[in-house]
Length: 255
Ligand code: 6PG
Image (cartoon, rainbow, N blue to C red; front, side, top):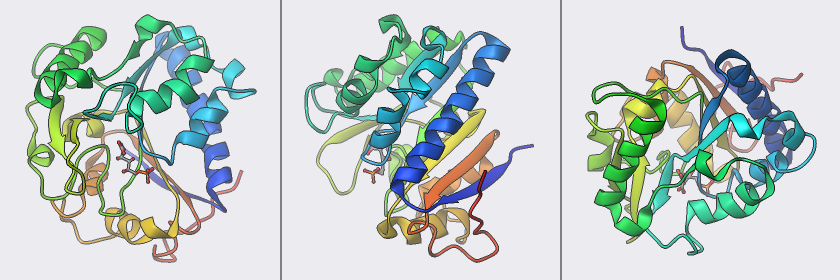
C-alpha cells in the first residue's frame, strides 16, 4: 500500500540535509535488494543544494555509485551547455563530482528537439529497464519539485502532456516559456517505488496545499497525480512551503 508522508523542516538547508539522508537510505536499500538503483533527478533550483550534499562527505561515500543509474525526470529543449539545461546543472553539481559510470548516466537528448528526444528517451528507458511496450518501468526513486502553478516535472496545468498515458516520455510545453520541454509521463511518475518531492519557499505554499489537500483536479494541479502513486511519496517541505497546510497534515517530522 502506498504511503504519503509530509516532513517539515525549518528551512531550505535542513530540507537539503534531510533529503540527502533520505536519498542515501533509499539508494542503499535498493542496491542491497536488487544490486542497483535507478533514480530520476529533478531539475530547477530547489534540488541544487541536495545535489551538492550528495557530491560530498558523508553522502558521497555512503552511496555505491557504480550501482546507480541516473536519469532526468524532465529537460528543457536547449543545448546541454545552455544555462537552462537541467542536465548541465546536474552535471556541474553532482555528475562531475561522484564516480557514477558514464554509461549509467542517461541524459535526455534535447538537441534532437522535443518529439524526437522524447521518442529516443523512451527507448533508453525500455533498454535500461528491460521493459516491453505496455509495461511501465519502475524507478527506485524519482525526485520531483513543484511549481507555484502546481506543475511537477514538466507536466503543466491544462496541457496535452498531462493526458498522455500510452507513452513513458513525451514532449511538453511550459505556459510561461517559449522553451519546449521533454518529460516523464504521469504513469511513470506514479509507478516509482519512492518519490521525494522537495518544496521550499512561501511562493509554493498554495500549490502545496492544492497538491496535497485541495479538491481533486489534475488539470489544474498536476502534482495531484502523486495521490495515485503506487509507491511511497515523501513531501519534504520547509515551514514556509507548508504554511497553508491544515494543522492536521502538518507535523514537523523529527528524527
Ligand atoms: C524543471 C523542473 C520543474 C521544477 C519546478 C520547481 O525542469 O524546472 O523539473 O518541475 O521542479 O518548476 O522549480 P524550482 O525548484 O526552480 O522552484
